[in-house]
Amino acid sequence: MEIPLNLTEQLQRFSGGDRDIAEELLREILPELHRIAVRELGRERYVIPFTPTELINEAWLRSLHKGGWEITSRAHFYSVAALVMRRVLVDFARSRMAQRRGDGDVPVPLLESDEESHATPDHAALVEMGLLMDRLDEEHPEPARVVDLHYFAGFTLEEIAEKTGLTLRQVRHRWAKGRDWLKDRLDGRKLG
Image 1: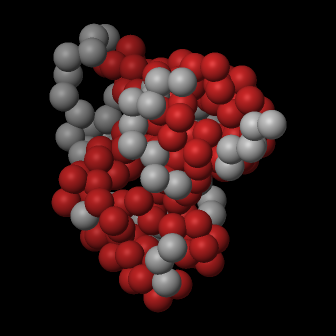
Image 2: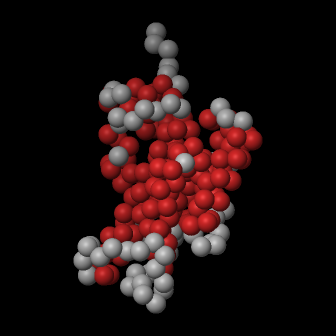
């Protein structure tokens, strides 16, 4: 009799190349992926014409199904999933902005004024947030991971502490550092 694998073990096997486990894994992770997708789309409901299922499908097809990442925990996987969904939305916003500008080769400054912008402010803000999160991840990966889990994936700080093995104090510190870093660069706009 085979002992059932926990989700982390399933994710590790899948990311290591075991495609036989994909269907079982997808059944288990789909409800949480749907919750993350609903949260992501809720922020961008006037910008992005995706349903949660379409966003999950796009994220799955673009990156998640390929595996090849070093999954250390369930929280790490959902952080990766939130990041992939965010990138799907940012890429969509970029393509919409490029269409409105006439071609895809026009660079978009981070803090472009509304008078100069030919794209909707919501698309510009989404692209800006995506670029900033990429920079945050490069400069401060631990706070970026907590921001992804809390702001983008929708986990509470307590859930993040539980799922990552960090103390609540460590999670709060990383959240504050990541949030403050983003606030400084977002010119005073609110971040949850």
